[in-house]
Length: 270
Length: 270
DNA sequence: CTTGACCCTCACGCCGCGGGAGGCCGGAGG
DNA sequence: CCTCCGGCCTCCCGCGGCGTGAGGGTCAAG
Image (cartoon, rainbow over all chains, first blue to last red; front, side, top):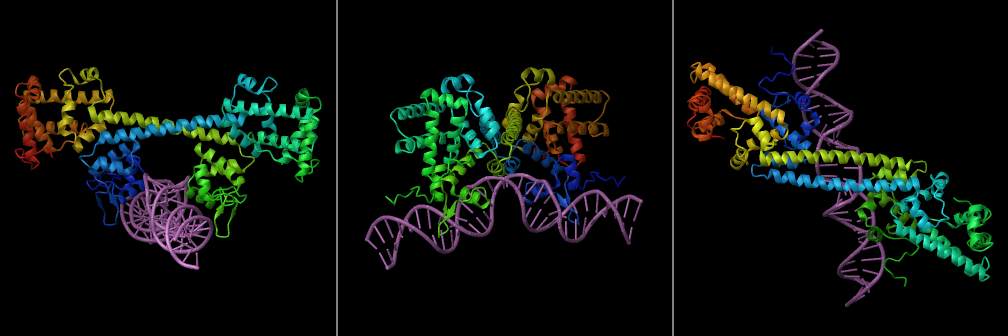
């Protein structure tokens, strides 16, 4: 009879008993004792904490408010101060919770954008892509680029930037590209030769346009120039502006690279 | 010319300059240096941190991911490991955010309930109150009780309990009260006299019923017994069960109190 | 008397810095 | 030249609410 392991023997319950009954950890009880939120009703000779019915009652209340997300200081006030404005405190807490929810929802939206940017490369519908980037734009290009470059830092930076770019910004990029294309054609007409200051300036401008897109080193630009010449789709685009423009551009990039002590024949993307 | 205070002098920017341009605190820059997330590109002879364009670039990326709520370790992985699964990490983050939103929404609901309990005392519509507590129940009673006892611990405990009580639990309480009322009437019929063991047992049962409602000490019970007799509405209720029941009950409570060394004539609510 | 389940008291760790103490550095003004 | 002020440096404590040991006493049962 007397040896029941968890009898409410008028003495009180030990931390372990309270812990399993109330579902709080022993460490939490220790902590709340330390900070004076819930003192055990008494101690045994050996120093064991004992919680009587009154303390357990208080503990119940503590648990309730803790589950509502109140801080321990707030709980102390609510439990201890008879003049405390409990509904007011709860309302403040609710307002804070609402704020945090809002913040998290914004985070979620931002994460969605960033995920889409990393996976699709562009945050535009196919229609918007056609309208902004022109009908020659291939919607599969970002997916292909991701296949090839998805594991590079450049792709990631590109994705991070495009996550914060709306249709207007894309329009600006597209306009800049179109302007550049026109300028390249005009330069060919005017007889500008690769390696001349005028050609170098255009090459530099090309690099700047792309850098707003993703960081393009001169070496990478060399690779790009060669791709423009070799890839049928790109070559067709540039030669459609002026016959031979793809080759002219590649030669201009090569010349500019040489002027910066880069050997275009050995340059790599990295 | 050379003395521009924040020139990008090919050397780099100091912490203060970076701070004001990127909107991060100097302390954060120190911290990120300490943990190796963002090392300054170089140090001056005096030990000043200098951030060149490359470091600022990296910092930009850090800020982006930090605004998405990623931890610094996650950011380090995303920025540094080319094999890292960035969309996967972002999706994991989004899932975590969703969980936290859900948790907070539950908190908000719980807070609403608790606020209502503290302000109205009951979380039932007037119809539910009538159906459960009987047509004799006065919907104004909780408001009046709040007026009188709102600043007491007892009211708060009552509110906390009623916040977690649904209609079914209220029904159980109402049933217990009705059972008790019947038992009191039967006892009077049977000629049970105040102070007898049978009467004491009923008084104790009354106290238990109320304790599930809110903690009722014997002294408080004495006050309650006197109110039952003095308050016309309560008296009418009990005398409606059996003529003289209000007085019989008050005398029974007084007798029980005396048996526990309490003087009913001087007992107070506290 | 031993065992094993409890209990105790320190004391560090976490996460991302904020904030302050105490002191060096650098450019401008007198 | 010195002085002043603002910016920079390196520690180092603090927060919130405990988790997670380490190292050692206590208690009832076998």
